[in-house]
Length: 312
Image 1 (cartoon, rainbow, N blue to C red):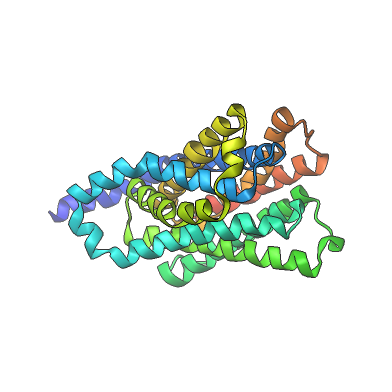
Image 2 (image 1 turned 30 degrees about the vertical axis):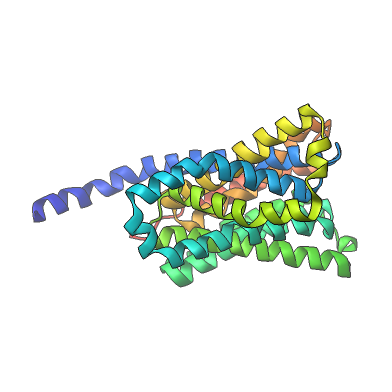
């Protein structure tokens, strides 16, 4: 047995590059999904939908689509769910309804330039700090440098200036920071308790379906969704519900399982830059020079942070 353990230990360094490449691939996929739902959220908003409508679609469709996975888990892994009910409750809080309400609610107060900075900056910084504090993931100088470069790139992408800060926008920024912190905590819990990405996706989606959607229907009657055109409704069902609602949770959870929360938290910072490129064909918004440069800077910072030597 000792010999087997020595052989497995010797193979770990050889497996690390493959795991890193897989983690980077999943991270790029997660960032692309983030960019897609951001662009199509703007697309839906100009066609009569509101932030609560999009949030309801995201939680409702994802909750229904992943419910069979939850049923399978209940019948086949019941002991695991019961033993870890506090963990699942915490995960549902961190990445479910409270996160959605903070993230989408902040859009009412903060300008578009702040959307590209504050939530993603807090995800990256808090992911690194919480990972160091709770998981003993060391804060290497290379990681810190990478995060700093990423933040500089986000500021370039956003075009944010000092004149955009008012009492109203500060409230929105605080909500963005809170949302990003919740998401970072979600990543840390995933890694600490080795939660299955598919199971985590189904639990979070169903909890949000059960808590947010009934309140939304009671308060709004879902009037905007019922009166929306077929094109708008089914496009947002596909993008916000299936691609974003299911894909964002799963790809991030998978990325955390491969890379750890500190390195995984850097990838969402790519979403604003990707969104600027995707907005060209969808919204007719030609990327500014600063947005392109900012994306390149974010990529450089990401590579610096992610390729830092992991804890042994």
